Length: 252
Ligand SMILES: NC(=O)c1ccc[n+]([C@@H]2O[C@H](COP(=O)([O-])OP(=O)(O)OC[C@H]3O[C@@H](n4cnc5c(N)ncnc54)[C@H](O)[C@@H]3O)[C@@H](O)[C@H]2O)c1
Image (tube, rainbow, N blue to C red; front, side, top):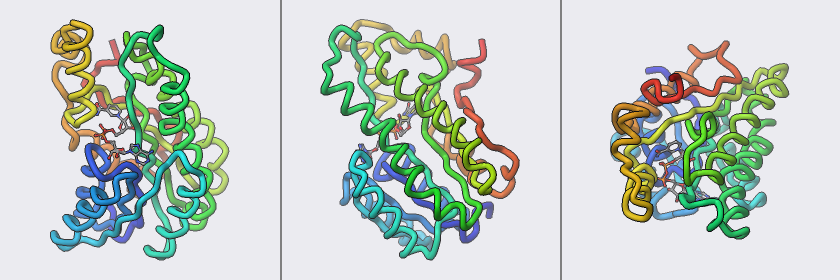
């Protein structure tokens, strides 16, 4: 097992990639705080982990509310006896032409995708400094290259990548690593929404676009495998990386 007794807090963990991180990290020996704005979904994931013999508990938090995140981190540390890894995973997408994006949509997406990551890093850092832990931020291949209809999402994920790189420098002396994961389109609810919205609302053949860029849809476990590595002691000298998980989609 690669994460024995690591204490891990995951946001947005009721579904999709966050849920996959929680389940797999638990099988690697980690203790998990499963957090989401969807409290019953988070509780269901924690129950699934416990039923399989792992250690987990669920806490509700909205990552856009600083008081929620501060309380979440404090409660997770109290429940687990410390913190070794924070995964800032909660995120949403907006798929539409820039001319159709409202100010409210801009503010909402930026609040979840960027401000939520800021709150997580800010409040977890003092605890991670005690354990020489690490942070994994969910960015995206959309933070590395441009996509039509994703200007707002791309802007948010570019911000997450740059925040991660800056904090890798700022936190290095304290022994806290900060890395970003940059998946392309992965088979989660969000991945399906990308594909469906392109096709149904805008008539863009998303299958062709995916084939051209990444060959096929990625699987959640292919992102999770990279997260396990980054969270592990084996990645002790890996810091400030924005790791594409895209079958070469951003390489050519
Ligand atoms: N699926 C993909 O293709 C893909 C690709 C690249 C990056 N990502 C990123 O990975 C992360 C997870 O994506 P996913 O595909 O699992 O998405 P998802 O929509 O399947 O799940 C997102 C989870 O975040 C939670 N959430 C939403 N708003 C929240 C808030 N304010 N506070 C707390 N939790 C909140 C939701 O309840 C949900 O459980 C996101 O940051 C996303 O941008 C996904």
